Amino acid sequence: MRMRKRNTLLVLALLWAVLAWGVIDSARRGDLSAGTTAALLLLLAALAPLFWRLFARARIQGP
View 1 (tube, rainbow, N blue to C red):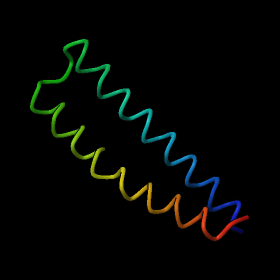
View 2 (view 1 turned 60 degrees about the vertical axis):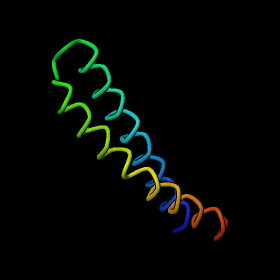
View 3 (view 1 turned 120 degrees about the vertical axis):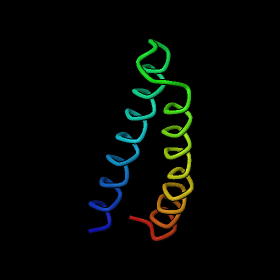
């Protein structure tokens, strides 16, 4: 059961990284305005501490 939780966290982290890359790439190509880019990056940055807490909790509980 714990391994499933850890795998889910890894998939969520990968999804977060892909979304961040997509926002940055779209901004670089000019598809997004500066305000939209800033808002999306702030939203993604707000999720980062949540991931760190979930990973830390999963690491403390062990395999």
